[in-house]
Amino acid sequence: MAATASTGRVRIGVSGWKYARWRGDFYPTGLVQRRELQYIGERFPTVELNGSFYSLQRPESYRRWRADVPTDFVFAVKGSRYVTHMLRLRDVEQALANFFASGVLSLGRQLGPILWQLPERQHFDAELIEAFLRALPSTTAEAAALAVRHDERLEGRAWLEIESDAPLTYALEPRSASFADPEALHLLRTHGTALVVADTAGKWPRFDALTSDDIVYIRLHGAQMLYHSGYTPAELDEWARLIAAWADGSGASDARPRDVYVYFDNDARGHAPHDAEGLQERVRPLLGS
Image (cartoon, rainbow, N blue to C red; front, side, top):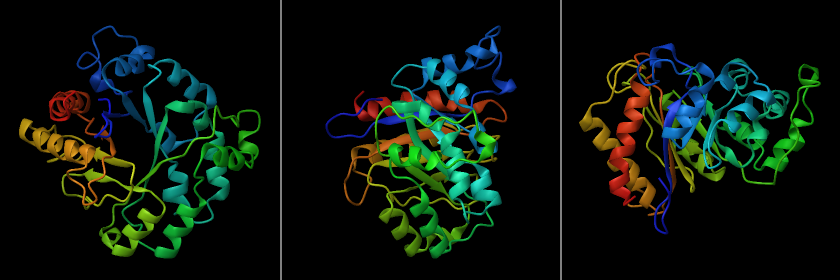
């Protein structure tokens, strides 16, 4: 949904696309797996890459994914769990260099927000969070300079080029209630990092504070059963109203319009793409598009 002079752009999609449960349901029977992302790109303006969370991907994969979708399609990229869950955000420079050298920058203009999901055991530590946010490159040129310092694991397979120098956008998804601390919100605002609005069937806290001037990042994991339940028409109606208000600024205390990224992650029973389509249909008339 395109932005107007008075609204941000709303992009609604799914988290990942390689799910057996979707085949013969959302994906037509007989659609070959190599065309699944192309099918996604025909129906949604964005997708959240989640394979990058589990392992370093390769530049040729990012290039292939980019070639499969329209030129205005945007990829959100989930940051490495090695950084968030294993290093626990400490001494991350080498790991960040490897992440940015792995091919992320080959997405060029189609690189959207980079998501960092924290484990539930990661409580708010002001010194640690500030150091991590400071370590993140703020532009693609800074990311490329960092990527040059990759280690031997990426020798011969690193991507160190950029098409142009552009700002990088980040979102943080904590799963500890300690991040409701006003100091946490202040740090995120200072570094322009979006605090993820996550619906997790009540398993983890939901944060609604807008900490980025530019974007709102929403992850919908399921309202009643984590990863499994679909969204009812009434629940989709409510999310549509919230998203439209954040996009046009009427739902923000500063009245600032923001771009909104929404990803459905309730994929276990195949609800995610259908819910994403349902939400798109509801948001369009609210934004006059």
